[in-house]
Image (cartoon, rainbow, N blue to C red; front, top):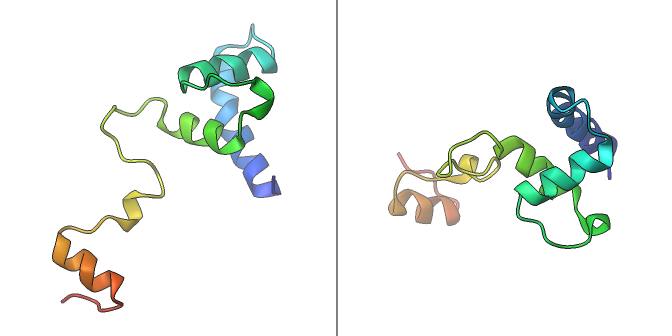
Length: 89
């Protein structure tokens, strides 16, 4: 995991850990994994799962995943033109 991802994860974990200060780090990770619907071994929990869950944790159920929203096009025609490298007017 690169340094910027470690920093991002720590930044996202800090408010959660501050709110749940009675828990240790592993207990917080297990709690977050369960919230995210992760059912595997905690050792196989990825940083991506934690980061996306922490980013989306307090969002509505219909909210778009960060990183996908930037690629959304208003309509099908714009999407096709963009895919072909043509900027729509």
